[in-house]
Image (tube, rainbow, N blue to C red; front, side, top):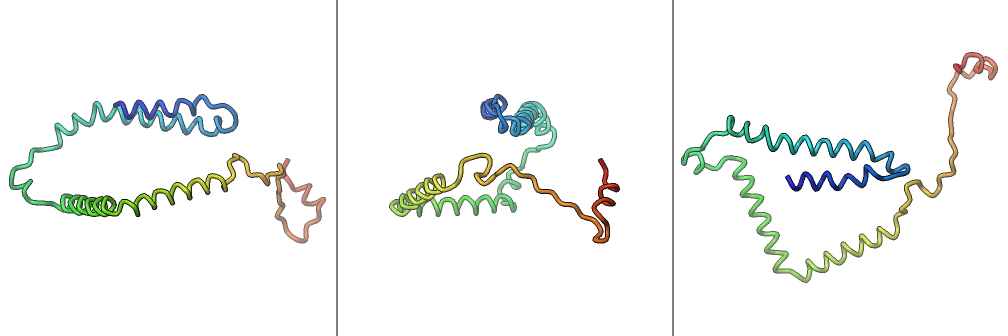
Length: 146
């Protein structure tokens, strides 16, 4: 519940944002806030009721027999354990990778433009007309819609 409410609180500044960005992201913030709120209501009301009706207790024989999902989760856990052991055993390499990642992020932050509109935007709109090659300009203008 606290996670959902804090997620909604994150989108409040976007709702109050002014300018072009505020107008662009207002619907986005409202949509996400409402979706999170509906998810919160469903998780607090309908989910416990459905679990009481749908889930059944497993017998000892059922829980002793690993199914596909259980084997997959055990495989993921073992892989995570191996990678964690490697990272703790090779802490200098892990620290070097962290510093390289931070350095790359700083470089990209400096290099990438930060404006909403690109610098080369000169405010021009380019349009085109497609017509038969044998038509004259006056005939094209007469047949065009206002």
